[in-house]
Image (tube, rainbow, N blue to C red; front, side, top):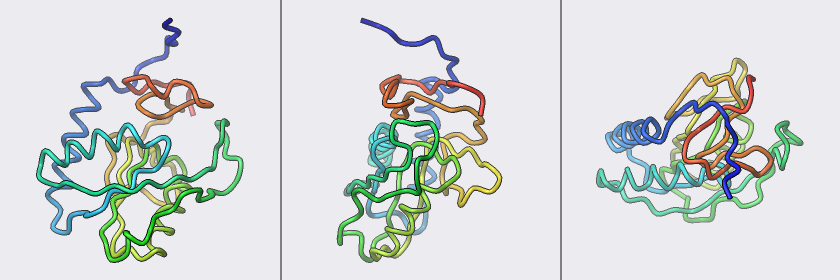
Length: 177
């Protein structure tokens, strides 16, 4: 059964893979390369898998630990300040951690993840996201972003609307922000 909605596609599979290849090239050319990947569940898992494979193709093979934070639940509106459900382990101590996430909207979740990773002892934290909305007043901006200045609520490529539409192979707009 295919109940794929008719949503406007913002970024196709080809556009996404092209941007990931570019990001992997930029990250792999850093003088101080990350040596540990920390994908944020759940929204960042698809991007993380693709980015990690693209990095590996460039000779940067990273061990992986997962982070899980909660802020939205099944809502489009933040329900509370980010809560860390699963934080980094001691393995992060002294490492250059690459936090990988889906969307940086106002930066609350990514900022909480970054602070927690630093407090756990990371030497450096670099962030990579699929979309950095670059909202004015955001707590931070990503070091690396596949796409920027996207005003829409987005779904697909791991990102969801109340748990739905994560499996779309492209990024689609649900509404204007």
